[in-house]
Length: 202
Image (cartoon, rainbow, N blue to C red; front, side):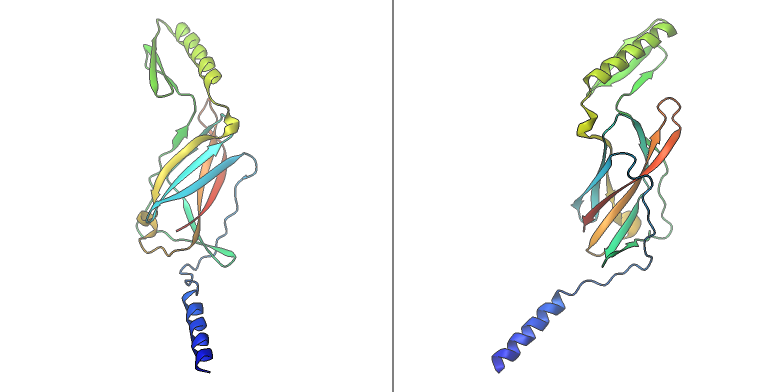
C-alpha cells in the first residue's frame, strides 16, 4: 500500500510539472493574410539568442520589393493565436528598404553598378551613351544572375523582440508577421502588399 501511494504521488507531481504556462495575453488575433497565395513568398525565423531572432524572406521571381521595420508578434495558446502587445511609448522607424536584385545608378558622369560584391564604374560622355550603357549593363546582369526559382533573399535582418515586447516574453510557440510591398520597377510606386508569416519557439 505504501508503494502504491508513493507512485500515485510521484505521478501527480510529474503532471503538475508538465502543466502548461498560462497565457498572459488577452487579445485574440484577427490576422488574415493579405494576398498570401498570389506569390511564392516564404519567410523563415531562427532564434539567435535569448529574445533575438533572425528572419529571412525569399521570393521566386525577379520583381522589386520593399519591406520595413514594423512587425506583428503573436503567441499560440491551445488552438488560438493572441497578439503580443508592444511596450508603451515605443514605435517603429518607418523607413522603407527596397530589395532589387539589379541596382544601377548614374552619378552624372559615370554609370555605377555591382557585380557580386565588386563595384563597377563606367564613364560616359552624354546622356545617349549613358542610356546605351545602362541597357547593356542591365542585360549583362540579367544574364548572369542565379535562377529565381531557387529562391532569392529579398529581406533579412535581426530583431530583438525585447525592445518592443519587453524582456518577460514567456517561453512558447510564436509567429512573426511581416508585410512586403511589391513595387513598380519604373515608378517605385507600391503595386500590392503581401503578408509573410513564420512560426518559431522561444
